[in-house]
Length: 225
Image: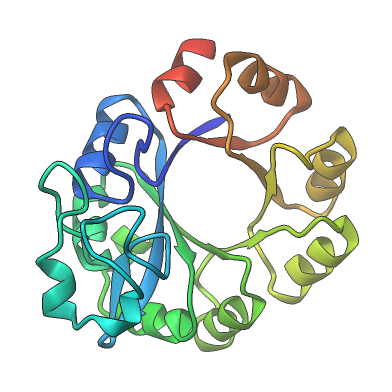
């Protein structure tokens, strides 16, 4: 069962920062997951479309220039990183799950990956709730591994996974059932579960046969293995 650090290791360091990613690596994560938005034609690593929760900025991300965004404090003096910086930090060290959060991120990601060596692309996975963005990725570059972030409806999610020739389905802890796991595996899909922080839940996921869990505390996963 893969240990996937959620937004790096957001329970231990400011989420979606290089510090958080390095912390996840230190704690033994196999993969890290980050979120990306598009700003001034650059992919930047942040979860929300607003700045108030995770930075000392206020209001909408879209109202800032790239340079203004880079001057913000994302916690403990950390800057909001670019996706390229995250790729550089994880290449050859851990796998990277990139979640697309906004319009245009799919096309921008494919453009970025065109400049990324194949050796770095091998351990990447692109996921989203936004099927239009995943469809753009699939149409532009069929080599990219795709993860469908699942809705409450297993049939819809399995159908989208088939259309996109997805590698995996990502299910919330609240929705996952043994049926989900078996259906995914029957379709040749990996099934990953988010966000799993309690040891009892981590052990239950392992017993259920899920392929990986996202956690804010990668050490928790490690200690339960």
